[in-house]
Image (tube, rainbow, N blue to C red):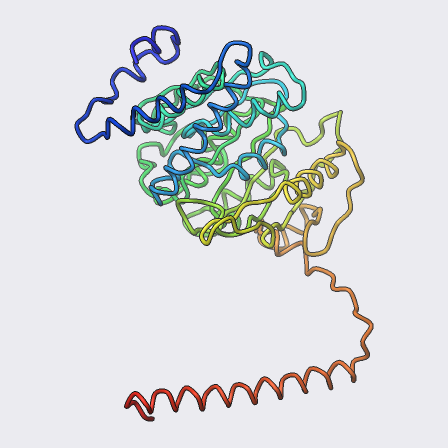
Length: 408
């Protein structure tokens, strides 16, 4: 560990303090793991090796998150969520910031995005902060394995109480903050400069995070982040007023409702917010006074009995819709049940609620061509058969219970 720290200055103080010699650690398993990783070739294949090591590391993070359950969400954001955010934001060049960066998944995907699009890695500057020291160490190791140079800071207080990048104005903010955090010490920050749209309630940090992200955006910056669904509609403790002020400032760019069971740590339904400081960018279509709503709740495939993932095809459908709406390629069209571009006037009539399902309408169902009378005759015949089978099953169950001495 000392040797690794010596050869990687960014890891100074990160590894050597970890107790790899503790008695509870299975020395044989540790040795086997080291031998296995040692088979990954270096030398001429260094870039490929970094990718393999990075994928191994990401695999372990995912397994740890699954095993940790609720606590796993503190350091791991599912890959399909990160990929969606990054593909929507397209951070080709500039300063990328995540004030609750966990194990660094947002940064890793940003780096992958630039490589996939033949960008220069040096065009990206990465900034982050994490309040959990163990998670911060995971992040530092994740970034070093990938060869990513980043300014990631740690302190116990966290980004609200001790902002490590106070003067930073980022081109991209990308984050997955804790959902509905009730222990963020908001009572100590009543007059904070970041609360330009209203003082967030001390019992829920959702709109403290939103305003923290906005505060750190450059004049042309854009933010993409995950929040609990309640953030789109809650009117308690002044949250509705804060949301209204953000909407009226024309900062909300796009809202995406996500399917359930995407996260390891919570069953709380979630959504993606995209907030833009410059909706009249000369490269894109002028979208001032308008918000794009995307309802992706029906998307995703189950990868096991508890977890769902967005497929590459679904991710492409979401991201291409957003980019077409922004005028970055392709023709945008509203699709009932999936996406709708909505003017601020209509959002006002809905009480400044940002739930996509309220705006996109119902999915159009194609007519099957079967005449109504024929369809009703067929369906009622099928229903009669099912009723008969139901009665038979009830009789069988009653008889089985009677044989066991339970008659009713």
